[in-house]
Amino acid sequence: MKIKILPVCLVLASFQALAAQTLSLDELKAQIDQKVSSEDEFRKLLNDPDPARSIAAMELMMASGDPSLERMAREFGVFSSDPVVRRLAIEAWLKANPVLNVTYDGSATESTYFKNYFQKNSGSVNGDKQGFTSFPVNGYDEAKDCYLYAGGNSCAMRITDVGPSILISASWSPLKLGDDGYMRGQVNIYRVDEPIPIAIPVTD
Image (cartoon, rainbow, N blue to C red; front, side, top):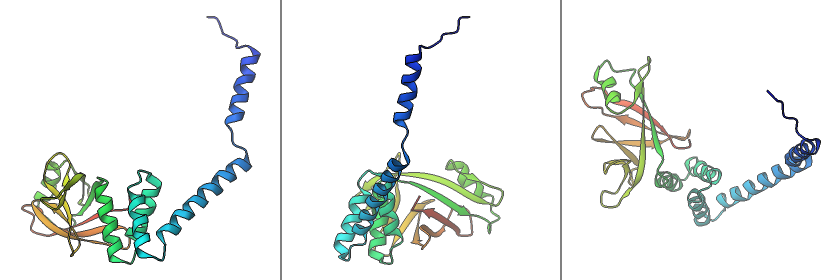
């Protein structure tokens, strides 16, 4: 087997190319400063003293297609003390067709049907009776006034003046957005006597 030896000129060229791709400390600092400065400017827009400008900035950033801007705007809205801003943040989040990652606390039930629900819905249950499902959202139905589950025309979530609610096991259940960025509530699962507490992260 012959061993190929690269010409010295090619070896040197490869080292030079590698060196050219390596950032110097000053270049790295400059890029960090630019990124931080840019993020600060966007945060100033979100914190504009004019509520209309602040809300417009949040909505446009969440529809920008830039994951960093979307997350920044979503967290601003979700953790806002203004209920109007919080509602708009949830609506913008749902318009982006997220995946509803739902955690169920079944620790208080003895029903065997609790596990059956997850078997039928491609979910899972651990030894502590914590259940998990993931439901993708796909679009908004104006006639039904709700956001739909992907793969069909069944409602997934809706938002009214009372707040958000989710449709699980053919029953609407109200949710409340907490200070930790999670929507929480209780759902009624078919043939399970006890209401089951659920939690859905909005900021993930």
